[in-house]
Amino acid sequence: MQRKSWLLAGSVLVLLVLAACGGKTQTTPPAEQEGQIGPFDWERDPNAIIVRLDARMVDGPPAVDLNSIPPCTIWGDGRVVWSVTNADGSETILEGRIDEETMRGFLEEIINRGFYTWEDELVPPSYEEPVMESVTVMLYGQAHTVRRYTSWPQNSYIRILESCQQLSDAPVLVEPTAGWVSAYATPLDEEAPSWIWWQDAPFTLHELAANKESRWLEGPLATEIWRSAREGRDDIQVWERNPNGGGFDAFYVAIVAPGYSRDATPPPQ
Image (cartoon, rainbow, N blue to C red):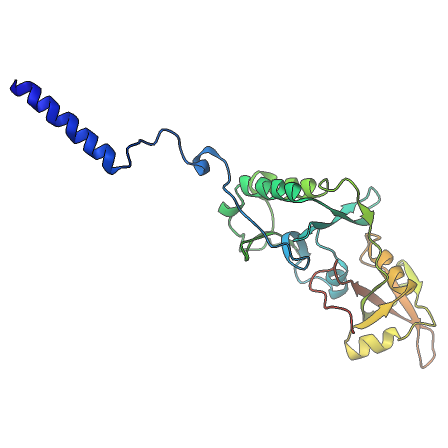
């Protein structure tokens, strides 16, 4: 009888412990431990950048930096802009739209690759003009960016970029007809590819370079500058006749188009 009493007391104790724990035991791991992602959300604002893959030359020429377009950007309303490098080295900029399901799947791919566990590479490589790549994700109003110069875990940067380039099944070519134009004087090189600044342009390259300013430009000339910047060469010169006579002067010309270029200010009102 005494043995049965102890067994009964032990059973009661076990039941009390289970009751205190809610009457159930954990039989399956939480979703995060199973490799699944819990619910998350993003801003639907068309001006909010949700994902951006960028690549910038460190301390490179200003015109090159201004002309370069981030390899992939997705805004809150599902607009996607990305670049494609062609066989001849030229660049094509494309734009498309994706739905929320596609957006969520792309975000899950980035996170599942371990994005939030990656660390910055703080020391740049020793060679000249290294390119810093970065991945930025904005969720719940908080931006998280990882920056690296060389290798990425499991080559994830290029893998994510390849996924971005295939998100939209109806891309259109981007060729803006307006943007902020700036010019930078350079020694004239007759061997470099070049074209001549239009005589009927609303301002001169000499003005832009002397004042170190950018001016808003609309029309076919703006598109011509954009196309020139996409040719995949950093040595394309734009020639303009010297206002004091004596032949031509050479410039590197850049265009920053709102909605496509990074850090672009809105058009003038």
